[in-house]
Image (cartoon, rainbow, N blue to C red; front, top):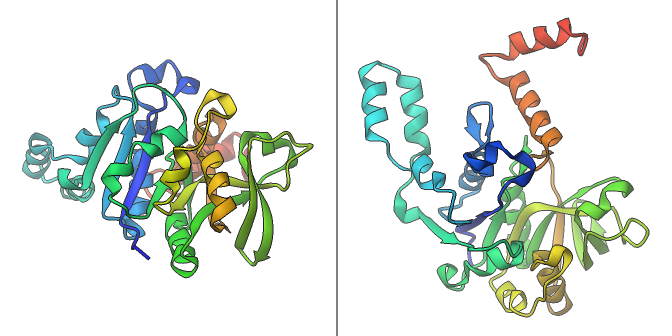
Length: 290
């Protein structure tokens, strides 16, 4: 069993639900207070022991290398003006170019197609996938999934319960065995109608994948939305090799939607040391909290 050293982070989406701002700011660079969504994903991965990153982009978003690269002029300014804490925060996010690989998905053909493009750079290694739209706070979901992977030596998917009315927005699993938060998966269905959904256990944007998944990605036909779906490839894989799910701890925000993005902003503001008192006062004055 290989160690999980690499995170594949797909960021090729055009962010149409956030137009017009995403004409000039790629979706993964939209910020929760002063940190972009991509940084929450990367810091989660680093804290889980990930060493290298493969970003699947659409060719237009050039911000990742700039955000994680050195900015000597900015660093010089911060040092000269004794902005020590800000300088430290900038240095903390800086990564060597050797740790980052950028791959271009020329046209939107789905998450399955995006992941397939990373095959030759993984060199046979198992890996994790993190979707920045799914912001998960309070617990490190990737670290939890790696722990299950280490015990099961299998693909592991992040799961959460959703309402019956929401099952058609997610990949949904049918469990064959439930042991606490560990769930052996019998079947996966991408965005099923609520009347045929086998459960309300939804797959969210965290995966630990065995390298053998690439065999099944190549066998997958276009599915929901006319795109190659990762869920469909995992479903094929699951017919031959076991797949597990883990109902993660922590709070998930759907930052691919306006409301989820706003919710994440609000909760971040309520715990931010610089503004939380003012934010609580503002909400109290509006009658939102007591």
